[in-house]
Length: 477
Ligand code: AMP
Ligand code: MG
Image (cartoon, rainbow, N blue to C red; front, top):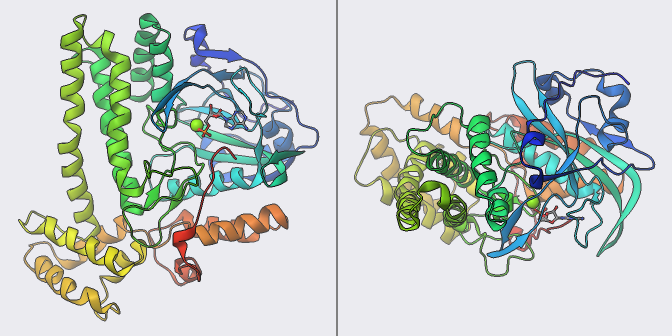
């Protein structure tokens, strides 16, 4: 078959063999392309995809140079340790783009693997389209994320609680699929040599700019902490709730991964949880930074033998590093919120100004996204915000930067549109039930350039007619 521009160099296969299992995706009976991401294909240097995309992205034909494998990993799921692995995913290989960037090309929903446990290894069309649109929205928001290259129907049904659903395979593009859980897997096996190899590998692949001054393990821990901190601040900035921040869903690259029960918050409420199984609110909106720190602690534990030969000293190094998270997060949060409000410089009252706005939003059931857009309006409609707006105005007047710079900063940090749950559901229903992709593609177009407010966005800025508080998302779909 045609090569289509693939350039594979599969460095993961050169890691210790206990880290993966080689196997091809299971073939599917009647592949049919649902959506192809042409702009991403272009960035990747792929061509001629139109002619053979269904065969290619169903896993029915394997391009030359690919070395498919399922990765082994473990993870803390809702706090409990489990051995996992790619149960319904296959990494086709690592593709090198024309500008020499390395990406994992992964199929999700490509059939059973040695790690499938009780699962069927398959995925349904709705959830794969959901990952497609939310990951592309995330990319549009400028937030580190895996991306979606294609969704292909398999021609086979998958069976879920609500009956048979059309099966599908998503092609995911990621900086890598190394997770905190990958390190946990090696630590559980007690394989310090393999852990050391993986530390070096991860540093080379994701942190080439920082060279180890201390031990490589500590360099990596600090690097991952900085990236994950940045990531969660971005999520908080745009109202994103990941929903299942288990350690197997936290990447070492700092990209958002595994769009399962995730969703964007409409009405501001720090306790918002959408996932049907998150009864205790472990992964609630405002608990996400706390969980990032908890996951980083699990990561640090896997590195202990490499941090120092003396266990006590190693624990001390790890603890000191992890404990620096809170202060860094507080500083990052203040800086992020100041950008949302267009504030330059420091004022002793800034934290109060921010907290008071959030409290007013919480108390009055304000929409998170739309409120940050509206505070800029002189004729602000919400009476409860008027006093606050006056305080904000006087703060702006006391800074030397002109107002247009503040406005620009606010525009760059406050999305005018997010993929709202009711719009996502509407788009998915017509795509998977009626085979009509128009609402999906329209929504995709809207969320691709989210920072530029424009009249076409109006339908996507509206809140659902019925309460968004009852919205629920599901895992393992
Ligand atoms: P997730 O919640 O998607 O991060 O998945 C957690 C674990 O369950 C991973 O190891 C997945 O590979 C596995 N898994 C999820 N769905 C399936 C499925 N349908 N068949 C087999 N394994 C699955
Ligand atoms: Mg996962």
